[in-house]
Length: 242
Length: 242
DNA sequence: AGGGATCGACTAACGCTGTTAGGGAGAGTC
DNA sequence: GACTCTCCCTAACAGCGTTAGTCGATCCCT
Image (cartoon, rainbow over all chains, first blue to last red; front, side, top):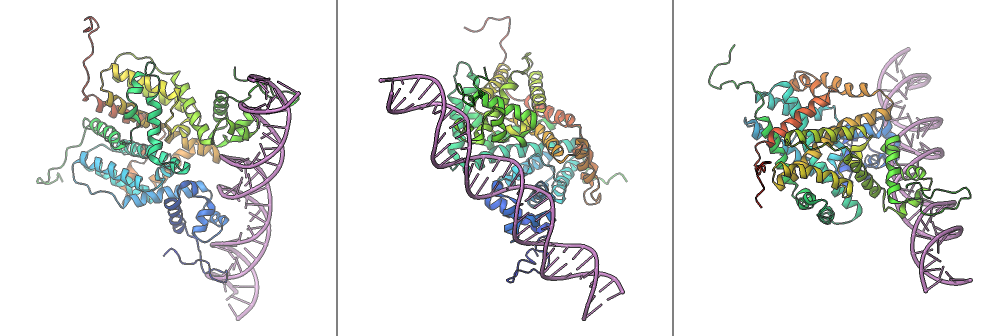
């Protein structure tokens, strides 16, 4: 469906070589294979066997292309959404972890997503899923919205902070492990008399066990939600009040 | 102290025109005045009345310069840290708001800070302050570290998500208000039968009242901390066990 | 079937970026 | 006075996003 009209041997073309879908697909391919730093208008165009200026027929900016990629990314994430079980706390936790897993598995995903609010079908699918789940759990509309917003920010923030150093380390050509532990070493070497608590907490702040930090923050946030007012759940045995 | 050895009329120089401190100061000046997109090696060099390649004597990379700027930013933020009152919840809340205020007041600060873990004195001052406060409140070392980490991520994430669109809108030359409400309109115009909850929550998700969302998430997180075990506070009247 | 409009690619070029190579003036040291 | 070290310089490179202008292929209309 995508490769409908590529270049022909004689240099002429059949029908559009580039469509918006093909553009997104090509962009995501470059992103996954070579990373965001290698994603230029020229490289995406090359992926479609086309020259860079052609892309400007379909897209105003590189910025607009990145917006599309962000939504495309979410669209792929929507395909991995976990099923809703009925216990909001379990469901919300699993949603957060699934989102995190997805972001970690897609190279530079958070660098594209962070600070962007995609407004396409990808974002809609993800958001609707989460909002519906929270609604069914009895949360109010505003609370559900804020929970969704906050949680997505939290998860992306965490993944960003673990994905970016990897990108940087790869770019610098040093082993990833060295890069992350180096910061911890630096902090541990600070003067312990001026910064006693900092030095003592060096490992907890910089260690590679981000899962643990993520779990802590996520669970504290979930703890904070239990006191929120919730609409009582309809009894499955009783007939609804109609 | 900074402008010690600028260019002389005859083109020769006295002593170093560029020092690491001057470099950071110049970088922050450009950042504040013209934004991150205008912060190039050439523009920072121009701020010091010097050519771009000279900077590479003091700094390996632009990346390294940005690391320094990030720490410099935190150093300035450390000067606005609120006093500790003794009630951990009040103190932590005020700390979060002060940090947020500071980040919002410094153009593109979060774009520099996000995903970076500065390892200089600026970061040390901020972290030590917060860790000491949590320690005094009786929190365990690990909990305090995780709280600090999570909170900084949360605050930067929020500010980033409100600061980035402003940068983008300014770059595109459209009013900031239009840019933020446009996303809400787009979402509100989604088909309400496929995305009922999303459409209903459009305003809550995209409205300009980020303070409200921030308050919600912050307070939920703080709520989640009350159940954590805490060392009992030493009675101010009783003599310490020495 | 032919003519005109439109779509969607092309080449060429601009100014900007981060970065490297190599040169050279001034200060400090023996 | 010669040597060395520090620190800035000019020149240049490859790559970037983006714009202007061109031109073949296709579709619609008569």
